[in-house]
Length: 424
Image (cartoon, rainbow, N blue to C red; front, side, top):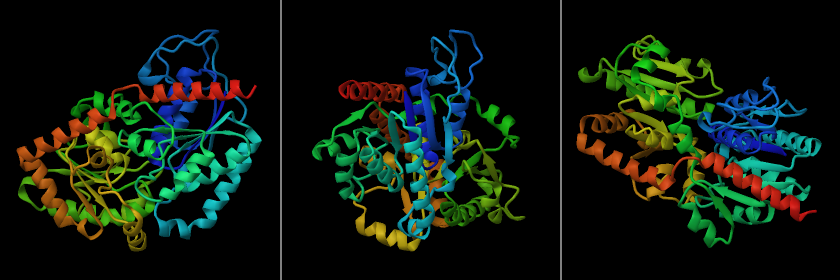
């Protein structure tokens, strides 16, 4: 079958890549065309032009966690499959930022509609990214294509009016958080819940299955303790968080007990050193380092982490690294958000347990002094650290066990078969 998948940011690329592994595992002859990033492209590339004979058995890069996949024939590259556009070309977050880049985003929407019509997939799978994907959902539904929505738009946080669009244009909703179940039930929207795919992504990662020494040697770092710093994945997030993070690092480094620490910035996917170099100076370059392609290992082996809110904060929970979330956005966006956002917390982990398992510093509260105080407490206070890790265990338990990506892929394929058979 033919799957057209749309992911519009780094977290969507991560979830999309795991979903693609699940699809290839359940439907080895799948043809997939997608908007996404490097992770999705890597999965697609590893499943093309398989040089083996008529049957393929053994560890497969297309399966989950190196599982054995048996197929009757190699998967050959189909015309039109693969990456359409990289998410870095359109990743925008915030009301003001969307307004500024409206012409570019509308151009992408128009191109995407034409591309779907030309390729004629069996299903369009939308991953989060609601500003773009709701437009595509309406178009695809009206054009007669089946529409699945994976990683539900956060209508429980704001813009609840989008519920009408979910009911009207989405054939099946696939959710990934347990607290979403009663919400969508109360709105009369059917859903499928198979757990959270991030559990698989973390537990099967290189970071979770390596020693700290492995990471130090591979990355060429000095064998010193480090604190992780994640500024976000978008240019706007990086430009607002980097001054705060480097200010935090300078204040920590000035303390005798942290003078030997390294402060590692996880370079975001699809970004380059140009996005960070303005804040790496002669004064801090000896202890502030930017590493690309090592986000999970930076988190996993850190004493503590300062994390821009998002999927990374939930990854940090699953890696058992104490954290504080810091978030700064455009003042206009923040003013609007305060008027319409109705959730108590901005971090998924805190939302899952409905309490403040780790602190969130937003806008002016997110400053170097506040971060220094919190990170020191997490490192120096064993009781505080233990309490946070206990909350982490509750979050992990709520997310369910392993195998979510394969289970979701299997459920999607079953739903698609039902649609196809009922239309005959």
